[in-house]
Image (cartoon, rainbow, N blue to C red; front, side):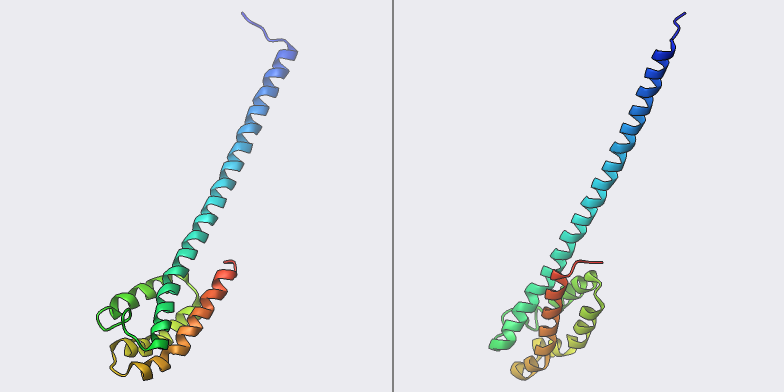
Length: 143
């Protein structure tokens, strides 16, 4: 039979403890990496939602300024409003949601109405407030 002396037993236990510590360190580092990846993914998703709101609002603001109706018209109003609503509620910002809900009726009257200049003036402040809030959200880290 094979017998281990005290030095070999100490080496064996030392190796086992070292392996266990190595495994624990690798596990902790893997969890940290997963956490960082999740934060990066959340940041990227948030930036994407901000862009999904910003681009249509900037186009609508330009249409209000020039009183043209190529993008936000009667035919496309429902789809654009739905996409804006989904992105705004996806951001989960109460101020932005409140601004959107306040400006929803004037925006619809701008898209559907024949008097685009007058209805555009009514919703211009809400569009500008939403764009301002988006700029704040982009610079402010999420808590």
